[in-house]
Length: 313
Image 1 (tube, helix red, strand yellow):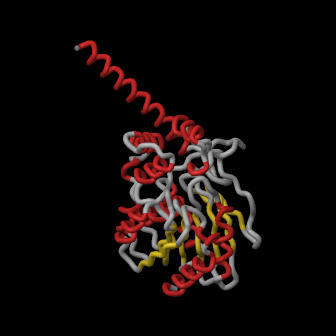
Image 2 (tube, rainbow, N blue to C red):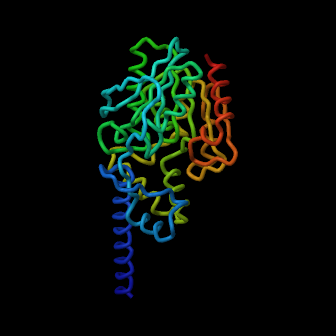
């Protein structure tokens, strides 16, 4: 009996060690881009069963995101010193109503924001498009899913403010939205208004969503992954909760969401919306997932954004 119990406990210990090794490796690959030209792992919905198993055990292939195009308007390339040196494109409008600073999502970079920048330009606003650390032409290969990026949001707001701009608005999609929320919570920046698309409610919930899309059980690996992801990047992953950051946000907020989003649940969005303290609007797009809302919903997106900006100007 003692021998069987010993073998059982030894097997449990080996399984625990194996799960932690897999999670450690997976967390590192998820939060560190590679400087190569290898193909990025597709979204879980597009992977075969064999590819899903391979991804679950060995992590995602994460080449550093690079800009694929440049703005059609005249722009200035800026290098700003933050926790890392970050690169931005500043596009000035004649007699602007204000400046909108745009922040991209996970695995993306500033050229992905050009179409939305164009729409803000048509509405009469100057824009600044930002590469977070590890992306585009910004320094490093690390991403912290909005945690350390919050400081870079503050750096950008401080820069635009130093130019004498009083009407500063922030736009962020997914990780960009989370970074904005954390920056307001941590650094008390005071934009005139923010437009945020599909922010997740907590780091744990967004990791669980990735497992669910792979048709894999969330317990216990999601929690172990969050633990090691935070440790590797210098923060407590279970404390990275945008739904809590929302309680510190008093400026006007336009919160946008796609009803078919498999990465962020409606429950998370509703919790964030409830916790927002100031003037707020929630707009939900039908037949839309975790994607660029402007592509499928251009007319509605423009109407929502322009009406919101008009109300708070």
